[in-house]
Length: 211
Image: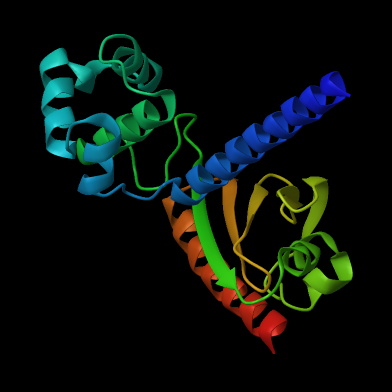
């Protein structure tokens, strides 16, 4: 019985760790392409944006490629991998090396999020159920690729070349949050249009589910 109890406790611990990792990933998904505040940057890395920019300028980052800058921050400055990427992207934008929403591979990606007053399962179903999705997603179509119930879902967009990655967060019995990224967009203009579109579509989703 003791061993069974220990195994159960260990299994619960692994599930909790997995849940924490998934929630952390969702949070980071929501922050993709958004400028992190000075306070968050200072808290997470010990330095503000201008301090990191000065360090990278002295190192010669203007002449380096994205992977080189991120690797320098990780290996030489001890910055966590995700924060190293955030600093690198922020630096490249500030120095005119990268356009807004542009990714290291040259494509563009935008994000959007919305908190809705419905249970998590209801919000998740509104995305993965094609019939439900068609009732609020009126500007464009997407087809489900893969999903992890209550956590994430991946879609192909109707153009055949871009994709949508969606993360879900349970905020209580009658509240949940969705955060998505629309990736592989062609240019900055398409990114701006797509971001505006998702703002409208998520407002439509909220109206549909809360009515």
